[in-house]
Length: 367
Length: 89
Ligand code: SF4
Ligand code: SF4
Image (cartoon, rainbow over all chains, first blue to last red; front, side, top):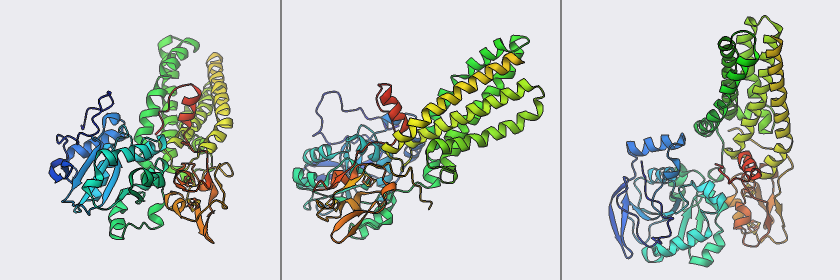
């Protein structure tokens, strides 16, 4: 929706105020630094639709707001300054929560990445913040010397260095934008609860689309191979054997993706084990049990049962792998931990897939 | 709310209480309540909850905290090993 030309083409347009031609801009506010775009607090259909698309990774990278200073309500030289990333969804959450208030919003250039990930990469960082305060002329727009940052930006910003570099004091706001009103009303004080990053069922469920979009195409790539090899190795005419073994393979791939990208995120706290691959393994066993339940009664020949068991092995290994991948979206895993987990999990997963493939081929030759 | 904790005893977080000036910044920025304040210095009370985001070390004005920070993301590590760039989060 919001496609704003990126500003990485060597042209230094830092001092140019953000364009008014963005859907959420409803006017301007005069400041000593010129006219600043006034943004509306209400999200329109386009904003909501854009958010949904971004969750499914459609146009996510172009989902950005132009960096710079914006106004909400009718701010003056005493109004608070909220800082955010130029990922449109971060910006939208912020303006929605600030409805009815008079504030400045300063948008940093993070290349369209959300606050947390950008902080991890250092683009939501000390240098960008100090430079942005400078180019926005913030010290002329407000009398006070305080900027309010989302707490999750702290991984990229050193508050004491910002103070030294710009004269502005960094105050870290709550983790969630929805706690902002309480934070502002409470004299810029966050409660312990506002400072904790949770990982609730809801927060995990919204991640599922991205997991699916990442996992499905990669898993579907292998399917034609199973049809082809199934048709060649199995007894009888190519078409019927290809269909028989290929369709089972398709169900198995679906079970794997369902386990790794849907069940693992949802059931995370309740799946046994601490390592995410173990959690994924349990989810895989769950869906594999379904597959067995549906196919076993019809599988009279030993070779058919062997084929099903081969899939149980491969589903478990695949789900463990996808579960391990979910570490990237989680808010609890550490780099050292993931490295430690991968050292043993990846070899085991690979070994399981290889033996599963071997069993599978063997079952076809047996038939 | 369920409290999820990842692997035990792997975190690289290190706090030098001798250097700590007790400013409380690490308590503010940590998203997993890893620190608490006691007798004028910060203290690690919830080590395994640390996700190595690096926010505490980044914002400690007296360099009392060390942590090998990075994103705990398998895909990024795989990409790194394959020589690609991180497409994490
Ligand atoms: S690295 Fe992050 S999670 Fe770990 S103690 Fe520091 S602020 Fe908390
Ligand atoms: S940020 Fe550093 S100096 Fe401040 S309390 Fe924490 S460890 Fe101590």
